[in-house]
Length: 75
Image 1 (spheres, helix red, strand yellow):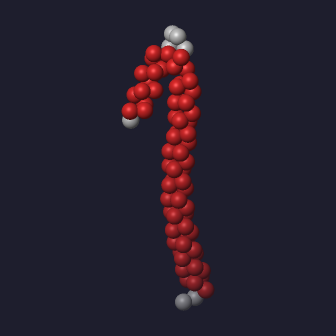
Image 2 (cartoon, rainbow, N blue to C red):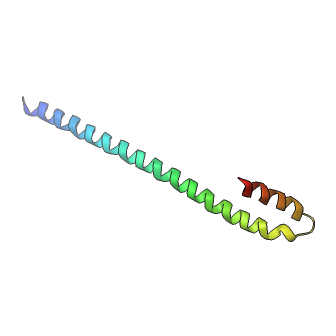
Image 3 (tube, rainbow, N blue to C red):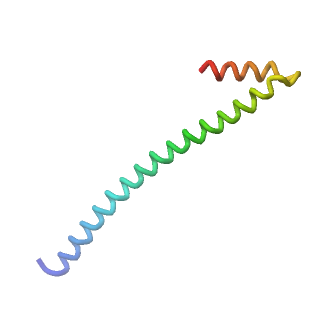
């Protein structure tokens, strides 16, 4: 094999290794992104539910808020 063929094979090998790493990095980033979204939504909903449960004693909207809190707590 001449020098040009070795360079081509080296480039192909480098591209294969790089594409495998890129696929693994994309998979890892997708998993971490999904996990972050779930944890973030859980925290936001917990805070929102805590705030709403404090507003149950408000005269006009208290009954509606109590119904919302009850439905969320049932699930």
